[in-house]
Image (cartoon, rainbow, N blue to C red; front, side, top):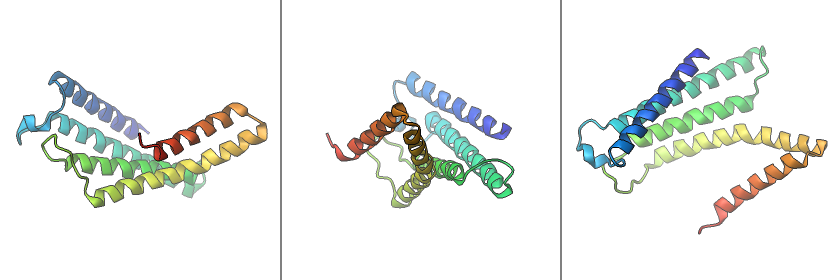
Amino acid sequence: MRAFLALMRISCLALAVASVVGIASGGYRPERYGGGFDPVRAAMIVSLAASAVGFALVARAGLAAVWSDKQPTSLSAVAFWTGLAVATLAILLIFASMPASSRPMVVPVPLRVLLFAGLGILAAGVIPPVVRGAAAAHRRRDRGLLVALLLLAVLVVLRFTWRG
């Protein structure tokens, strides 16, 4: 747990450095650094790398807990943290391979596959507890939670169907 917290502190500090440098320079324009040291990109790479390693450590600890049966950790939690680690790694690789210009970038197919695989694993970890929670809320007749879940479902459906 200490390693995870230390990695998250490093990640947040690097993200803060990237934000401050980007704001202080009037917005992030990668071509400004002309092949030299790009402090914003370097800070983002450090932040994403620390986050990916931290998420992987939590997933590993969760998997060890599932195998040992000493702690009540579910495979859903392991899938969530594994998916988060894979998605963060994909974003790290996308950011690291980004061209040094502010032109639109086309993400290479292998990195898109890695990103969507990570998001799929993350969804596989999130969806079962949400479904169990909705069923439990229905049994308790908890209308507040059911309304929140329905609104979330409507939001997701509208996001993917409404192009405007």
